[in-house]
Structures are given as structure tokens and as C-alpha cells.
Amino acid sequence: MSSELVVRAPGPHLAGVVVGYTGFAESSSGPVGFRELPCTYVPLIIDLGEGWSVGDPHHPARPPERLRSFVAGLTDGPVSVEHPGTARCLQVDLTPLGARRLLGMPMSEIANRSVALEDVLGPSAGHLAERLDATHGWDARIALVERVVAARLARSGHPDPGAAWALGRLSASGGRVAIGDLARELGWSHRRLIARFRAEVGLPPKTVARIVRFERLRALLGAEPGIGLARAAAGCGFSDQAHLAREVRDLAGTTPSALRDDDVNYVQDHPPGGS
Image (cartoon, rainbow, N blue to C red; front, side):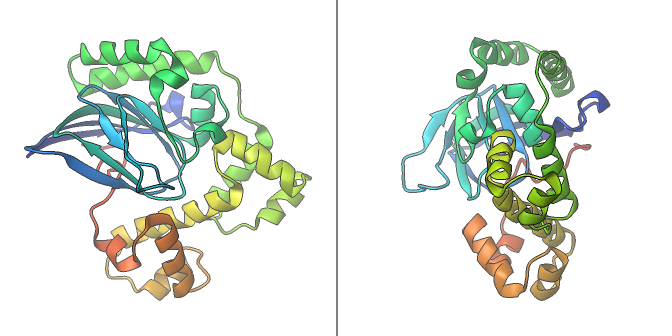
């Protein structure tokens, strides 16, 4: 097997919209699968290879959908992804609010779904893939995507300020802030908060808070693989170790020990800024 991985941070003018870029190429003697776990960003895959088979997080027994370029909304369960043996793509990780602006649609429409990029952006998605395929080198491809993203953002609106504030509070608190407190501070009803939040982010605020805690847990287990689970639970906002184990089972379909040991989210596990 041969593989290539190039990771880059976005330019400062795209802060708050793009989390990072990953150029990925792999060649193998047979199909290669990944298990993508819930995260707080929206992966947009511009395919330059033979496409992907993508599962349904809520119906894993269903046959996977065959996609070329696609965008994956926030999920509250693991998603299986497979390429046929050769793959080449540029992954653009977007913040939920950045994806809302870039795609120009309610994020609830793609929550727990992977959608062909042409179905969201129209023919321009295919044109972009062709231009990237004809461009030499990952840095030049990323520079092209940055120009396209910036141009599209210049024509887009801005996210709902209340929902944006609520997402910021959830992220800053590590998923610990009570949803009722968010509604009271905004002067909104629970129903209004949930509806506005789902439109801008994709999933309800309580679910996103769970994913924020889970994401912090994964980062902690990666940084301190020998940490005890009771200490990890306390550090990441879980009520106790049993709560941590339930959340890992529900969100990742595995155990905390397996989560620590498994090689999952191969592309997404590499933080922006290096190669």
C-alpha cells in the first residue's frame, strides 16, 4: 500500500469558516475502509479519484451509497467509508456555520447524511473537481479552493447571530453548559433555540454538546493514552465513567478502550498545519 497525506491550515481570511485542508491519495491492492466518528466540523470531499462508498449512520445494514465528491453533515453516529483500492481527494473541513454560508442551505437538511456535492452546489462542483484535477500539487489545489470559497462567501449571508452565539458557548464550555441556560440567556423558548440551532448547525444543541464532549475525550485519549477513564470522564464533562462509556457506545459504537486503541478517521485525525 502507498499513501500520501498533506495537511494545511486555512488562510486567516477564512478563519471561522474553514478548519483545515487535507490532500489524500492512496493505492492498495483492494478496497480500504474507514470508520468516521462524530465531530464538530463538516467534511467536504472533492474527489479526484474513483469515488467512495458511504454508509448510513442510522442504518448501517443498508447498502452504502456510491458517491464522488460529497459533503457530510454533522452526525451522531459512526459512518463507514470505503474506496475501491485507489483514492485521491481534497478534503475541506468546514465549521458548521461556515458550511451554512458556503452551501446556502439549512444544515438540518444534511444532518446524518452524506450528499453528492453536485446536489448542493450544482454543476460548479463538477467544474471545480475538473480544475483541481488539472492543477499540479496540493498547495496549488488548496490555493484554488481558497479562492473559490472566498468568492462564494462574498455572495453569502451570515448565520443567525443567536444560534452562532449558542454554538460558541457550547464549544467554549466543552459541552457543559445547560441548554436551558442558553435559551434563557438568549430570551428564547426551548423550541425556538432548537429550531434556529438545527437550521444553522444541523443537529439540536443537546446533541452537539454530546459531540463536543466526545471530541474532547478523543483528543485527551490521544494526548494521554495512559489516563484513567474516571479521570478522563471528569476532565471532559461526563458525570462519571459509566456516563462516558454510554456516550462512547452511542456515538461511536464501541468501548472507551477500543476507542483509545482503534485507528479510526484516518484522514480526519491529522490536525491542520503540518504534513
